[in-house]
Length: 146
Length: 249
Image (cartoon, rainbow over all chains, first blue to last red; front, side):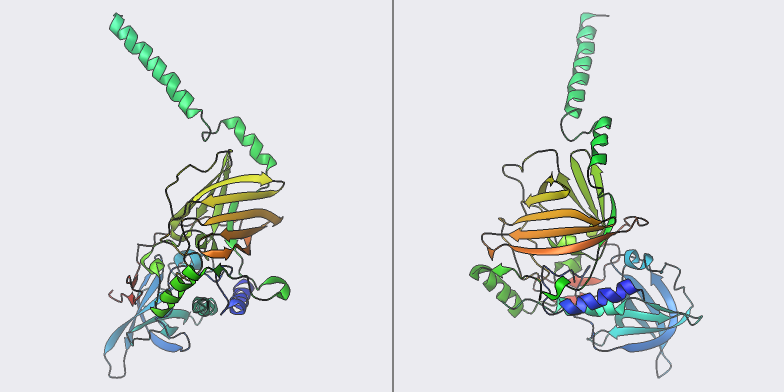
C-alpha cells in the first residue's frame, strides 16, 4: 500500500462523521451500504473471469463449498481507471488462477462482496485499497444532522 | 459564363466571406491567440484531488447552513431511509460534487476558454474566459454555466444555472434551488499543486454561503482514461432509494 493511499485513509477517517460538501470523501459511484463493512470473509477458489470494466471491476470466482458443490462468487472492485494507476492491470487475474480473496460480504447473504485484497498463485498479495473503501463508506454514512 | 452562373459564383464567394467571418467570432481562436496563454499560470495537465486531513486542526469543515425549508427536505430524505442515490444508476452528481470525485481532471487551456475534462462519469466543464456574460435565461444543467477571469494568479470562476436534479453536498438529501451560485478560486500553490476554494451560495437553500477548500496534485505522467459508467454497471437504486446488485454472470 502506498503512503498516498495510507494518508488518504487517515484523512478520510478524520473526516468521517462530519463529512459533507466540504469533505473530499466522495464516493465515485455508489454506496457500500449493501456490504457488511465490519465483516471480512476469506474465500479460496479458481478465477472464472476478471471483468476489467467501469464503473467497477468484477472478479468471478468458482468456490467449492463444504458439500463439494461448486458455487460462483461475484466480487466488486475498484474501477480499472483507479487500479490501472496503482499497479493493477487486466492481466493481474486470469481465468484458472487459484487465488484467495478477502472481501466485505454482501449483507443479504448472496454470494458476493466488496474486493479487499487477493493472494495470487505466486503468493503475491494485491490490495484494492480496502481502507479507502471503508473510509468512503464511513464518510457516506455521515449524513448531516440538521 | 451566363449571368445566372455569374450570380451563383458571386453567391458562393459571398457565402464564403460570411462563413469565414462567422468563424472569426470569439470562441474560435486564431493561432496567435495561443501566445497569450504562455503568460497565464500553467494549469494544463491532469490533476487529482488530494485526500488529506483537515489543515490546522481547526475543527471540522464548515457545514452548509440550510434554511428551514431545505432542512425539512433533508429530514424527509433521511427518514425515507435511502440506501443509495442515483449515481448508482450512473447519473452524474453535477456541480459541486463532480469536482470532488476520486478520479482525475484534465485542464485544457485554449484562448478564451479553460476546459475541464472530468474522468468521473465522462463529464466536461467549459469555463469561458473571453469576457462573455452568463446567458440571460440559461437552461439549467448538471454542471451549470461557467465564466472566469483572472485576478493576478488566481482564476475566479462564477457558475450558475444548475439543474435541481442534483444535490448540493455529498448526501443527496442536501438539495439546492435553481438559484444556487458557485464561485471557485483556482490557484497554483506549488509547481504541481493547486488549491480550489469553493463558495456555494443559494438564497433559498442556505442561510449563508459556505466555503470549502481542496488541494489537487498534478500527475504529469497520467492521461484521462475512458469512463463509460453504463459499460458494466451492476448496481441499481430505485426512486425510493432501495439499492440492488446484479450477480448474474
